[in-house]
Length: 534
Image (tube, rainbow, N blue to C red):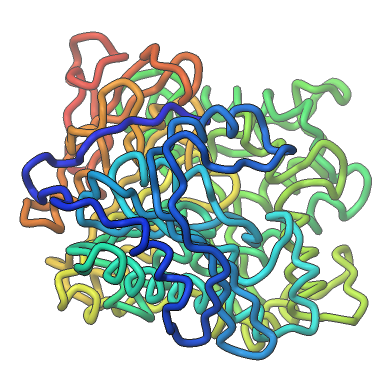
């Protein structure tokens, strides 16, 4: 399990629970009367004795030993006859910081995020998670076929009901309501985060939304478009072995004018470099150092926006950068073999099980226009979190922080910028929302850039007490009477996020500002950069 920091966040801003709740207060939750909810388990779990399944990874078993004494509640919510929403709520028996933290999901969900709940509980929060109404692998959508209510649960209902029930149980257990509530998640969890702000503005006081898959129908239609380009004919497919050549060409064209003034393999404004795929066209026979004409066409399609026949752009294209990164285009876009990418899998699951359940769906021949029209007509109301009117959320004091990696191969960062701009246009330029575009970061994390800034609720090197190095704490400070976040220092760890050896630090700036090199100083140190307007 990732390194877990144990501390009281923002010491002094909110006192810990003065009196430890009794074990009886936990057990009493078994008979609590909550709408559409059955509680199957409510008992105190002593410190270090959390029951982990025998088949769980060893890291999870070791991590469970760190957990404090907590009241664990296992419940099932059935808002409809076809619903089966599993949820858990963990409440620290001592040193509760007075706050509730909701956890999100990824992909098609299907499981409760124990790891995220553990991080929250160790930091003093009462924490809840849900499988969103089904048990499955994150890439498996078979549960959705013929089950529209389960789709609604996954789309928006499960997170909301988990939140409502959790707040009721928190108040019953501690004898007082949570003073503040927070939600933080990435990818589909980012979509869940925006859905909460849009549909249920009273659920959370502060929301941290990462790489949100908010325009679900357009995003997965773009996955279908890109899959068709890659599979159009055998020679159209771009194998993983050629991604390094694409990445090298992108950096050659973009790194020197990447926006930050430093040639370091990290692109700060990749959309501005004007990279031309045709520069990779093979001139002396095919090899891994170049692209054939069909492959150049495929690459152009991936970078291009998705446009339907009437000329409407429904989704932005991917930006140059991150093609050869681990966790980049290899797994997400091209796959290890034709038709084996994650986006291909999401498109097959979405259209095959949700949009056209029980009907044959051919990924290669499907009409992009018809597929998008059908997806929008059938699924947008449940899955899309595209409403830019967040006035009700902001009016009650809600704060929203959004982040996205510029090298994200799963969800184009341009879509997040577009949504942010629409929120400001709808709610006003002074709306309580901040956006951080992270140079060189992949999907939620990874990539060559500094990719650790508290987005997962932990910070192994600095400790969980510095809002200037932690986006989540910056959000919390903002909600609880502080000023809006400014620049944040992100860290790159040489051994990945589970190490504590710092490879570099870099400022990430509130959009539209970007971090620019001052012209002197170590380029691997954040202090050598300044946030500047474009």
